[in-house]
Image (cartoon, rainbow, N blue to C red; front, side, top):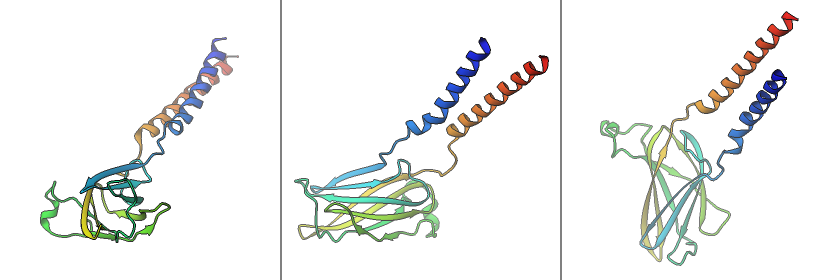
Length: 179
């Protein structure tokens, strides 16, 4: 009786642990907002955590009445924030050279989409230049790019499940040998 209960418990545990990372995964993405002179800029990345490499984003501009800015002549450049560390003092490298991003019209008015290729982890600045009511305006948005290393929580859960299966198999094998 105890063996059957133990098997059911382990089976349930395996199912719960294998499904839980998927159930709790976030699908919202990363969003940064900033308002300057009545213009609201929203930068939204598809991924929740930004990692080195290619990251797709949407950028939208709204006026003080929450209406999209059309014909804004938007230009975006991306560069590492060298104000917080000493790496930028040694000169320009391929890693911290500003990138000009090609933009496409988004699915909504006042929305633009693009792709940025972050060279490394750290603080990055998204600089936007656009026209609003005939005046040139700038909005800078700071973002944090994290390491692209493995997710040790998920790896640990799966390693624990494997060890548990091996222990139960060893217990069952010993019992079958005794019979």
